[in-house]
Image (cartoon, rainbow, N blue to C red; front, side, top):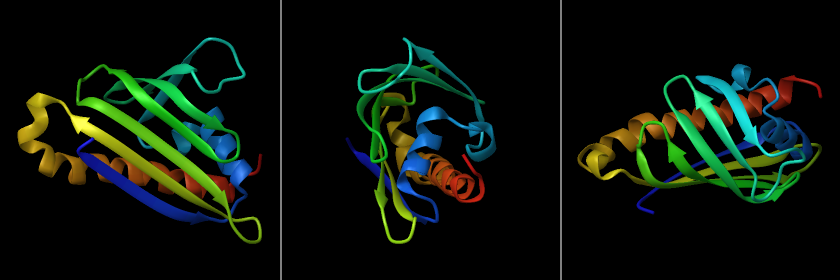
Amino acid sequence: MTHHLRTERVVRAPADRVFDVLATGENQREWAEGYRATTWYGTAPHGTGSVRDIHLRWITVRERFLVWEPGRRFTFGADAMSIPLARRMIEDISVEPAEAGKCVLRWSVHLDVAAALRPVAGTMVPKVFAPMFDGFAAGLAHYAETSRD
């Protein structure tokens, strides 16, 4: 992968809570800018190998879970996009317990942009993708800190 984005936050909520909000999509419209809906394929409980579509305001992404470790790690690859922005993309999200009911949230995105976008990737990735994923991480952290399960 040619582009790597990383954001990290200390969250004033337990790792299990942050993971559960992320895995269930609890009130995701509230914490993820542009989120519209999720379509799961297959029955719950979801885990490694599960497939879902995430519908954002401007794109739908089909995601296949590569790692699903409750309370710890959530990793998926993008199998398809309604707007082909990337040839390959993997999101790796981990939550690590910290002191006194806190955790460290690490959200990493690794991608190769589509061939047609390579000439503008140097601008697009830091100005569009980086703020979007940083915003998702910030929104998740804030929501987990201020809501009760």
